[in-house]
Amino acid sequence: MPYSLTVKKTEGKPGSVYYPLQLKQVPRPTPGPNDVLVKIAAAALNHRDLFIRRHLYPGISFEHPLLSDAYGVVVEAGPGASPTLLHKPVILNPTRGWDSDPMGPEDPASFTAVGGSKLTPAGAAQEFIVVPASEVELAPDHLTPSEGAALPLVGLTAWRALVTKSNAAFPGANLLITGIGGGVALQALQFAVALGCRVFVTSGDPAKIDRARALGAVGGASYRSPTWDKDLRALLPADRPFLDAVIDGAGGDVVARSVRLLRPGGVISQYGMTVSPKMDWPMQAVLNNIELRGSTMGSRAEFKAMVDFVREKKIRPVVSRAVRGLENLEAIDGLFKDMREGKQFGKLVIEIDSIDSPDSASKL
Image 1 (cartoon, rainbow, N blue to C red):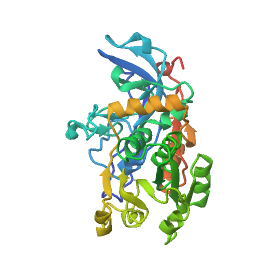
Image 2 (tube, rainbow, N blue to C red):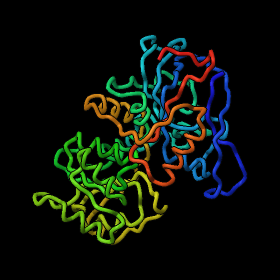
Image 3 (cartoon, rainbow, N blue to C red):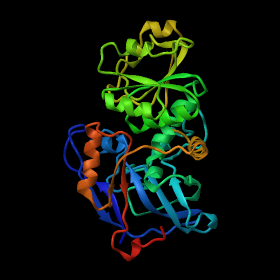
């Protein structure tokens, strides 16, 4: 029988508990009307998976497989699903419950990311998954399975934060992307460079800033420096000595610092707050007409637009490290350790083997 990977419930308070991984045997699913059966070739971790293991994420399921991101091949089409998808590599939409409204989910109560959620049984940490045919996109031909698995949730989050929310997705715009090295930040960097923006970054690791330069960033500063905002100001071009927008997933003092760099009416596009769940909002931000815009993942329409852009621009998501085998729990725990310690530069991927079972055979 095929396998799926879940978390096992143990006693402990949110934030102090760390749920162990659990491998389960499950029946091979059968696609229903308008569904497709996908054999997953690779899946990837996100910070939400780490938060789930710490019980710091709402609506956790201990039955549904973990992980939001998957690349695989359609091996069976249910009644009504297009047979043209058969044997085609696809990338799975990492969310459910948000169609196209640019303001936010049409029904916020039903919106969720895939993986370890009570709101949907779907999860990428399994060998086979049944999904509606409408929830897959043909994978760009230039991507490997690991690169394809690295794209969905961080790509969607970065696309919305940059293209939909920042007002700065245009050639020549000056952008600051904080915390470079994380999946969303790196994807935002790649998108912004492809759009012709001038990108500046922050990191606590000088080596990550150097690697960001190799990907097209103009330069960066260490957020560990008490003067990182002044350090960045010195890098801004004389013909445009200000930032048009900040793409941030950290929070903390980012508003107080970046308000000194942003043009009047500039935007802080906030997709996360890993430093603190609260931020100060100084009067200077009001006087400068700065806009703070929350940005959470994205819609199905934005997902399609993002994948099309990756296909057009031949963007390759950055994979930090991959391990092989869904059953390789020790190695997968090592990926989670990388994430806990902030070692990764890019995405952490599981290349899912065909575990010895007649149900696992596929045409990959």
